[in-house]
Image (cartoon, rainbow, N blue to C red; front, side, top):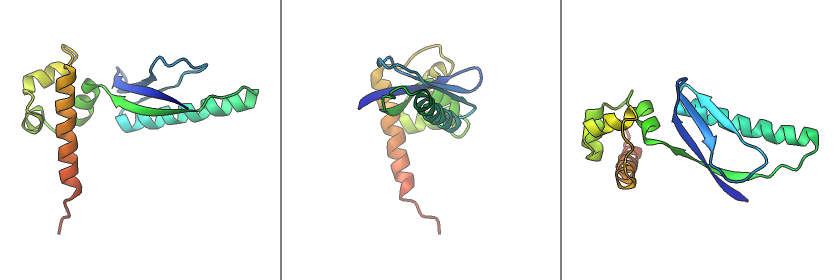
Length: 133
């Protein structure tokens, strides 16, 4: 089974999801006002494509796909929850830099993307152990 990357990026509507350039006889897209809506729309697009292929009697190539959120999309979505100052404290990346990534003026290096991702995962892990009394 082919592994396909699905990229989520900001759009005028909110967010869009599209498949990488893995050679397939079909393509699926998704969009939504939130990342969650975009993922759900993409999943529905995939299911509808599979159903269509069955209806017309064509062989459908099943794939496994994983979502990859562009840094600008992450900042757009979660900037409503965390301020850039808070994300700076969390990640160690200057909030001015984060603002450049958010507005598309710059793209972060792989090293910076990894730094942001690792910091967010560490924070999420810490939160998963919290039990409020």
